[in-house]
Image (cartoon, rainbow, N blue to C red; front, side, top):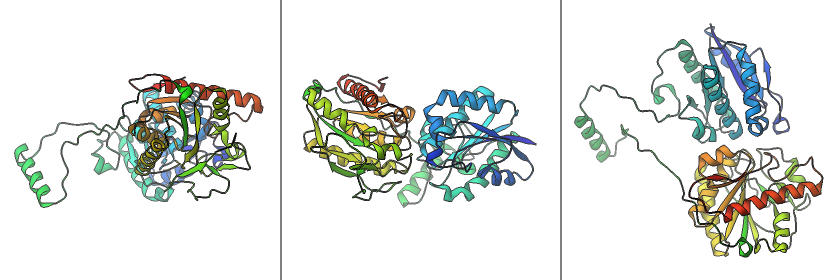
Length: 432
């Protein structure tokens, strides 16, 4: 019997949604949530002996502690296989699945398998290291995902040879293997060319890698003379969400006037984002976009001015193509308005979108710094200047502090962002 340990988040365990995203690791010696169906699909050849549950925010905000705790939980089961997810397009969940799977494989020498949507940031982070089965974007695809997962899991557990990505359903890992073909190379090449000329479908034998990196722009010379703009993937909007930006998979962004506003509060602004606990941002949206701090810096002469408009979208589940389009349009508008540099903020599930916006703004010619909590995603996507922040639902604040101390905390973070904009770099840099 193949012994399996399964990893799921707080949502699929039935514990709760964003209100329970800080749930600490727990182990149950039974299949839970999707594990129940997965276990039945093994048809007696494998058994889920334990399920590890952890909140998405807890894992991503306490990565080292979470990894160590979960490894200790798994050790005693002497498992043959570790399965994480499926995570679909849930960004924090995908990153957690990939991170803990890689850790289990490396530290415990256990075979691992996970599954997620191809645009989940966990794919870019771990596709070269792990078998990641391709799923639909949402849990609507659970019924199709689990049988494929069970089939590959049994092959791995039995030590059978794993086939090609198109045969097994996993995302290409970029690994090339030598093989003997029945036809010589010249004949295969001519056949491919003929198919291409006829407009028929063909598959190249040698896919060229795609590297989408953007060179960092030059640092600003004197930040005290610069017009600074705020952009966010964290979904901050005027109260009532006038543009009806979707809470997930946004099809639009908004441009909002903050002329004369010294700070944001629960009466003026809120978040439209559906991927994190909204209470902290709804109480004080400066915890996501630091208008109050930048106003003070404007008065102090530390920056030239704060641009009268900020731009916002919801990056939760938003397609990469949409993020690129938004970023390209936003940077052109900012340049027309004489903006010199940009501070872009992200929460958790929107980090991939935020980093993509950063790249497009950088590509458009403006220096930009990404303030975010899930730094590994920002690095993988390709942001150049990165400032780590506090926590997913309140990247630029801490509700446990009094207002004065929380403002000081935010002020120091923004100072780091300004320093990043003034620092010349020739490669990615995290400003701790």
